[in-house]
Image (cartoon, helix red, strand yellow):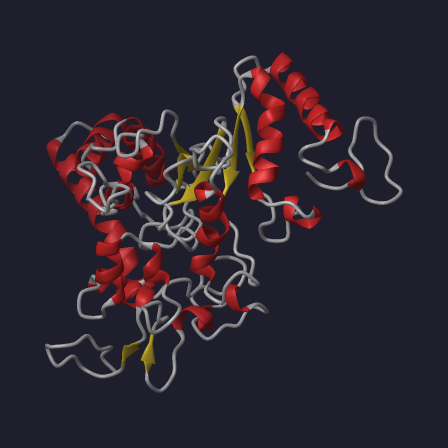
Length: 387
């Protein structure tokens, strides 16, 4: 959906005046391009779209919203049997001061919108909303994204990161199978229209369509395979690609069993080798979490590389900066997203709202995602940060 720069000429490109997602010019262009790709790749399934995100153009630049843009492309490619995966990784600062709230605030109303036939939800049947596992950006541990379970009327796709952008890159052993397992087996406490808890409501149940009877769903992996001999730049990082494939196929699997299978197929069937490498793998994610996001304080990286720590950095924009996320001051540490703060907690279903919104009940490993935790030793009654 990029506009053509002034003075540029190329065959079959759209001008700014043609970027109407309901217009024949726009839809005709996407249909022609999709046909060309399908002629070369007969089983090509569709497009992943990043729009109005991190400086990329999109429908909002022309007076439309994400539903208009996604459906415009969806209508163009539907006759070819293709789908559109529209990424929900958006964080327009004008929407809310808390970056973590912004995606749901933009996409939730479109999912709830009542249509002329009385049904709810405006996104087309061949459109998937592709949502990262957490509301920030592939941190070592995040709470699950509040959109899982909240988008009852729209096809859902869970986006997991296989490459280790924030989890040690190609230098560190970080086996991500346990992280995928934690995400997929997290209870959303999703309810039906009467407020009753769904019987099957884990993230995996949402994503496989069981919980809310979605016909089409997906799990997507961001892999970033390169030209290294081992594809991943780190021999043990190959295990993450293997685990993703296994858990996408069957999210109920145990990550330790997957690690065992991978070690046996990759290194040795010798029990001493298997036990040693599996132990290294299974402890690696929590080890990373303990120094990258302890107690839920996330995004503490120096600008750019997402590797070196720099908690005092301001990256030229608040929501790219460690200081925005740690909120460190003389009182404490952490971002208050409780009802007394930004109230991100309210985007979750009622039981998680209460759990995350109360500093006494929020899981310790998520404390600073939701609370500004006071300095000082704990008195055994209320959480504190040991100063």
